[in-house]
Length: 246
Image (cartoon, rainbow, N blue to C red; front, side):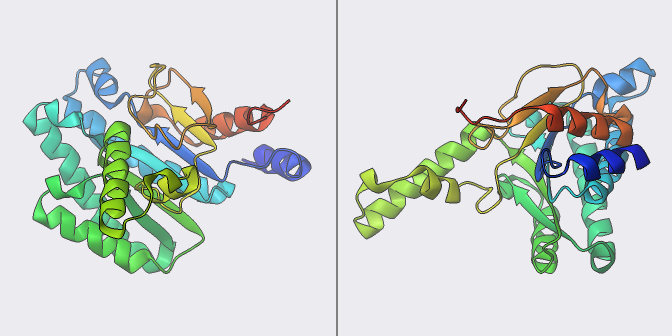
């Protein structure tokens, strides 16, 4: 950690840490299977990793962390596994509400939460409302989220708006469309991390990832520790982001 801080201070003017990091938390099931444990044990271990990484992002000066917690496709998984994931989400929200004044982390959700239980919907709404005053750090939880679904919903919202106001559909700009997404005013991710060895985006932040840097690792999510996060950030800081220029 001390070495990382030293490097940050020396090169901050050239290569700062990413403002927004997004993570596809992959490998929980395989982590459990490798240990002859039920897949649900992998999700429990992954939840603890999320807590540690969220805290370490704050320490590194990363303002936004977005995690892929549950996709629109994950409902296809065995019911006990889905129930375990939802139980872990409930535990996290209760913990966040309890420690909110101490941690000062704003919580926001990407996804269609209407498919969740009424209890989870209420906890999510309460967490967003109670944390909206905090501006130093924000955690975005993608639950029942899919990138294509998000884009379709935004397109529908624009069509409805034009129908109601008479606005010319041709007036739509990229900036205006971005405001209709779940991410709203959240800046696009600078760095997208995918542990677990897979090298695909899996319907995650399709619009927002246009100019993100990608970092893949074979380390399974429950084993992705603070040192692995720092390694990913260092790789990001070594890259030349040209945004289509020279």
